[in-house]
Image 1 (cartoon, rainbow, N blue to C red):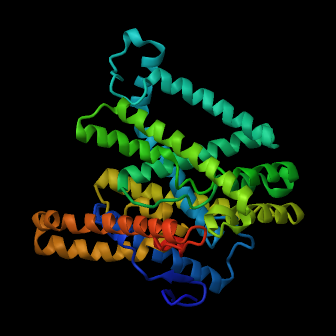
Image 2 (image 1 turned 180 degrees about the vertical axis):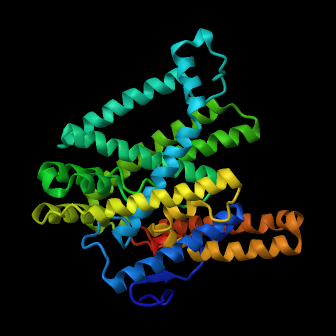
Image 3 (image 1 turned 90 degrees about the vertical axis):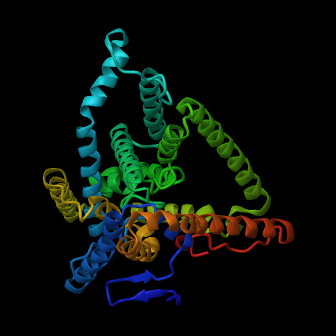
Length: 405
């Protein structure tokens, strides 16, 4: 076990103790109650897993890129689904007005002139892109109904992660279970067969834990436009251009490097080994299919009920000491990497608010922004050094603790 890891006991699992300056700096901007929920639910989840190991109540097979314990992951997944359905329900009036504006613009009082896209164009692109994605999944070898379920699961996860980022501002958020894991567990490996399982393995190249999707970035761009008084559509154009340019450049560079030096020699876990793991994992599941496990869906329902209770207490009585957001992502890999930094920041903010209140909080603000800026600048400097003096033989940069570089 690495020296920066601590194991509290059998079943609890090793936890990372090294705080990340980037996480500390970004967490300073997050509400104190949310910070408490993040580290509290993380440790509570680990304690739950330890009890399950002690009692033998564990899931025999673990899905790829999910939590260390499938039961806890599906418990958080139930809470995440409840959050998505709840905010969709709460926004039903707005969504109805948007639909009326698209169908009968002459009767609508909605103004979409400063939106990133007009409501009509947004709906058209949503339908066209959704149909294209489903057809692409079918072309990969998925049955049409499997493709639709996978697509819907992916949409819910992306909406959930975007909602969490919008409400909390957390720097790192991932889904507790992948859309592939949801699909395979819903139908069962034996029912899906080799064609569907192989097709789902290919999708890992594009859809994993939905932690790097553009929706949160676009949402932040819209908020930035409101603060700076800039047109949202102008910012959307910049985001779109930057995204397309990045995809083209990275695709070309990756292909060139892979053919010249061999993708196996990339070294970085995210660059190659994760896809190797995906194919190995799915090959193993074709040979030895996972059985359908009803306990996963029981934990899913339990997690949804728990988050529903917290949501009810929050909206009915104003009790928000435990934010459900922390529960929805507490079992993810990212929380195991950021929890120590979140805990430290939570303690610092508690002391700051007790001593100097809001004025002291604002006076300390530049220091924590400096942590973020300095950390990023240091990573860029190290990258430049490797590029100039160590071409082709660079060094791992510990830009963030969760990369274990």
